[in-house]
Structure formats: C-alpha cells, structure tokens
Length: 132
Length: 141
Image (cartoon, rainbow over all chains, first blue to last red; front, side, top):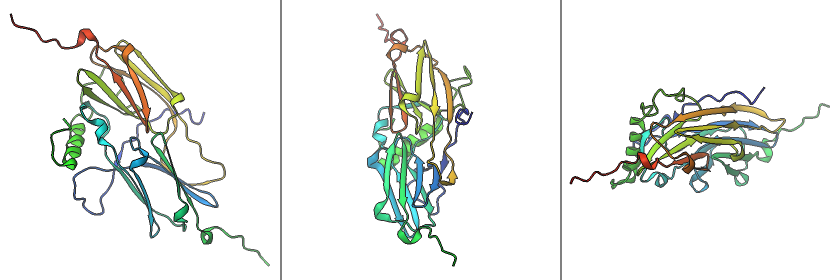
C-alpha cells in the first residue's frame, strides 16, 4: 500500500559553496518538494529544529532563497555521546521560472516543515488562447 | 562542552565537530539493528541523565508512538505527505512511510521517568538514569 513503505534514512546533504564562507560552520540543504498549480508555486522544505523566528525567505531576480537558523542555545549543557546526524543552519536557493508576486508570498511552519506558497504574478499565469 | 568560547561561531563549529567525532560511535553498540534505521538519533549527556534528540520533521504528534521498557525505547509511527490534487510536481525529495526503531540504551535507565517533547520537527526524549546506576562518590575512611 502506498504510504506504508518503510522510511529509509536520508543523509543530510551539505550546502556546496559557491563562495567560500567566512566561518567554517557547516550548513545543510533542506529536503524539498516543489509543486505548481495554475495560480501558485508551492515549495515545501524540511528544516527540523528551526523555529518561526529563525526563517528567512527572499525572492530576488528570480531566485528564491530560504534560510533557517538553529537556536543552539537549546543544546547548552548537552554533551554529545552518540550521533547519527549533524546540526547546522539550512540554506537553499532555487531559480524560479515563473514570475511571482513577492508581496503575497505566504509561509507556514509546522513540525519543522515550512510551506511557501508563491502566487504567480498576473502576467505569468497561463492564458487560454482562442483559435479563430 | 558548548560553553567557554568567546566567539559564537567558534562555539557552534566546535559543537558540530563534537557531533562529527561521535558519528556512529559504538555507544549504542551492535545490540540491535538500530543503526542506519529511520529516524536518526543523537544522544547527549546532561548531568547524570541522557537526552536523545530525534529528527522527525513533518510527523503528526498523534502518529507517534513511544514505548519504553527496561533499557529499550521504541519509536514508531508514520509520516504522511499529502499533495493537493491537480498539481504538477516539479521536485519530490521528501519521503513518506512508516518507521519502527528500537534503541537499546547501554546503561540502566528509569523507563517510567522518560519524558518526550515534540517541537519544530524534533522529538526530544529526556531519559533519567536509574538511581542505582548513578555513580557514587566513595569516601575514604
């Protein structure tokens, strides 16, 4: 049955750096789904450990950038003794083909998953062309 | 230890390195087929007790089932992803399905004292060490 598949572990992928960062901190790529309807483009990113105050979404020149920071103060006083994953900020950028209405982007965060709904700008919506 | 650095970035980097160093350390041992199974777990020490932090983004709290007996902890549940109808999917990386993982903690714990919290896609298990397992200072007469 679909959806009852046993979940495998997805290794966290590190951000490949286009420019060298000034700090040696490691950043990770959030696992992402992207889907499109006639009016919107929806981007769903998994960023476990990021709360709503630490998310930054930006669209500029057709590039969507999403960043999520980890509040490391929650780990204060904890000494790692066993680990299977690393922790760090999430960062990912996408070039978006459709023009989006930047002022109307909606973001919702739930259980470490952020859903971005980007409404397409009027001129980017598909138009039915009448055949005469 | 996370404290004691003047530069916050250095602090975080040191913490990342500490996690890296304990990557798949044999602490959980080969006691179960627990390594490599979903969901991934980090274990920390906090004083005498343990804190396990599990990455489980996008799971409903109601779909999580946690059980503890003696020194084993079972984390089971399902993760569902619903796509609205009539969309065209451009990129699909997130996975849905069921999971069932058992951790065998290599020390005596108090299974009745375990507390669980689920926030922002992280499941935190606070695992108290059994009273009789705590180290005692032995006085020299």
